[in-house]
Image (tube, rainbow, N blue to C red; front, side, top):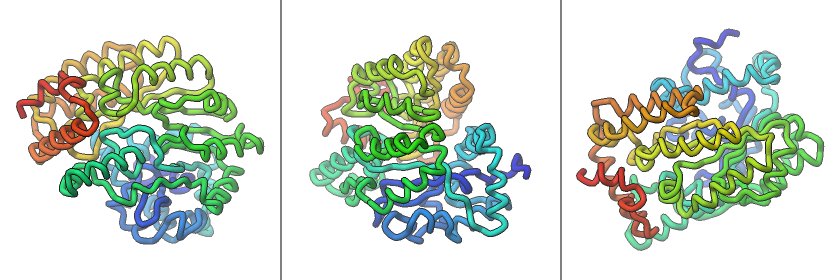
Length: 431
């Protein structure tokens, strides 16, 4: 089957699923993938596909998932896939496109169409061989652009701010929900863990993130299972970590699997990192990066900065650090252009401010690391945003929100945008 021109098809619908640590009223929803857009979804919505009301099998073999698969084969758009469609329209390679291309390069890709053929005959899909799991929202950081459902520390802080400032500061600024104060651990759900252990027999890829997964005993127990049962040599691990908690146990465990992709969530260096991702300490993170490099030579390393207003004037320094580090070990840079919350998006900056960042971004192309295809494309996409003379239609509204939320977090964290991000401050202060 030729899927080259199919703008809807995604291999994930037959191979992959996600278990979240967020959701309402049940914390722990089943999604087709991490790029799923719940607020746009009209197919899975209100069907109670969560760890309390449905098993993994019931979700995977549901008429709703089959409807998604049918629409994809027909080339019809899926409302919940909006995030990927928007990325593609902006010229950025979406997760859908990356996985469609990447899957065929894996040896599992040879049998993928057999999976589709079997499904077309009886509408029963083979078990997912790829899992994306958020075991918990437990996290030791409270990143400014994050959400309370993904960080226990941020949830506590936002609740504290609301109690002192009033609920009006929450609307469109923090999007806090009281349900997010509950720190769940899927490791306590015996039935769910049994299902996950059973899937490890056929699983080929596990994607772990949080919260911060290295903080969880559940994560270590889960990964010990395939190691102890001789499944690990068949499994690829994809791991998201903020690199604040790199222990010897973690480094050794990463050596046990067929392949490991370690993605570091780091948005800057020095004061920039510490301002965005409080209360992280850059000296500790840099030390942990070097420790991992020196003690593990198997993992493929990536850094995935979230490009946003806060770091737009410091991207060059961030890339320069990893450019130098690449002399020791290759590190792929896979940036995320922040899409939400709106008040952190780079394109809401006034045109005059965005223009001031252009030369610094052009300077990035002089670095060797900029030759990496993904980074090269993202830098060009960023340049287009910076050089677009048309301001975002709600720029004034979102900039007002940006200043308000920045001042709020600065107040309660004893931080200062003027001291930590002086270049950005000097450019935006007049607005």
